[in-house]
Length: 124
Image 1 (cartoon, helix red, strand yellow):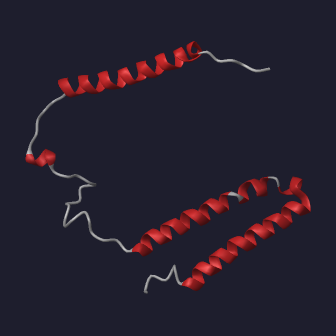
Image 2 (image 1 turned 90 degrees about the vertical axis):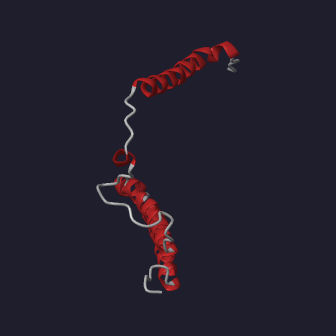
Image 3 (image 1 turned 90 degrees about the horizontal axis):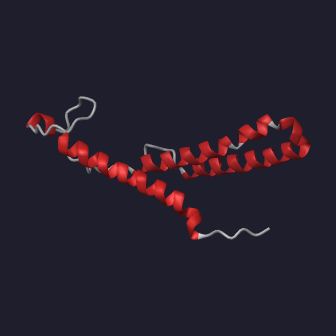
């Protein structure tokens, strides 16, 4: 059975989208117009956890930091795939066990490659 949608079928969605955007714009305009406007040197100062800002915000950061962060996310996401396997361990049987052994082997091979390349060595 094929359904033919008319443009009028989307009218409630467009009305809701328009009302939501109008609410956002009106709220921002009203709060900007009636809000307090007391500027001072102390109030305009950058604030972050009570620590005084020092130096330039564009200080170069070692690429090692970003590389380790990306590797952490990569391996963390791969570990997430182990949870459904553990929950359904008995249902999957021996084929599921062999597939997980293969998955773990590939995961450990990647980890071994990373260690051999010295990616996790901070002293280099």
